[in-house]
Image (cartoon, rainbow, N blue to C red; front, side):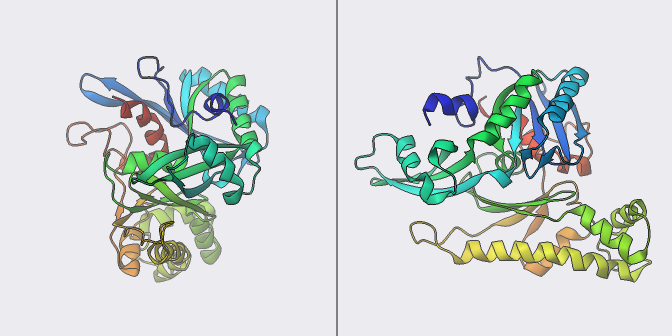
Amino acid sequence: MSLNLFNKFFNRFFPVPSFLAVPSFGLDIGDESIKFIELINTKHGIRIGRHGERTIPSGIIESGKIKNPKQMEEILSLLKKEIGIKSARASLLEDQVYLFKIRLEKTGLAHIRESIELSLEEHVPIPASEAIFDYEFISQDAQSLELQVAVIPQNIIESYLSIFQNSQIKIQSFELEAQAIFRAVVRKGDMETYMIVDFGEKRTGIFIVSRGVVMFTSTLDMGGIMLSKMIAQNFKISFEEAEKMKRKYGLERNTPNKELFSVLLNSVSILRDELVKHFLYWHTHKDIEMENNPPIKKIILCGGDSNLIGLVEYLSISMKHPVEMANVWINIVDTEKYIPDINFKQALSFAATLGLALRDFDKQ
């Protein structure tokens, strides 16, 4: 695919120059909802503008694929009318994106993009002619370049472009949800290695970032709703009552109903086992140069259901590794001087949205 065509569809690493850029919103599009937020540059620093969330009815988007474009266009058009969104940076779910590392020898290397394109089909199960890709530099030495490559089917990008065009919202860039979350929850310039866990309602994203680059992504079909359903089933109560019980007590051992701890623990242990699996894989497998991967410094939790009482402590103790809640304001505001109009628990579910909107401030 030509560079011009690539830039047309997937303007991630080649953004519009800041003096030409139009202020934008961050739009985090998932299977069940679309979150939006606006960051405003003021003389007092970055401030929160318009923000909120809209439900996406079941079946319109599945695992990142748009199944009903017309209905999605209606949702976006209504959002534009109600909120006044004219342009946006949007997220792409990892389900449709392939990541791999590649090393290119500098000798005889004329065009990086052409060299990557020639090797695409060795790494991803889609023809190069049907793929859109981009890359980030990880490292280089005198002989070679190490790159992280992201690949997505062209028809996926085209489907997203179409719904934005038909709803008359200008799309400034698409970006991996994992990359946007990373920008929000890790301090700018921090090159350490972290595991980020985005624990949502129905899905959990597991990402490993290192040297400023998303190295690994995985999605687990498990979230807070599953926990509530297990409580409802076990205690024969309504889903709403189970939600209240989950949020009130969480993983506290000393609750009026001792059985609640065991019910939740059975579910949360599934998440823990997945984290352990990826944690061990990262630390026991070599990189493309047969060197050890840098150790994960800590595990960072975000997502709407990550604030389950006792979850941080349980994961930290059972994994014997530091675990902490994300600070989604770390690169945006000093919360001792300004308190955003979003409470801490709600803000955890806006990590990707904030990271997308923060992209405009990276260039300043």
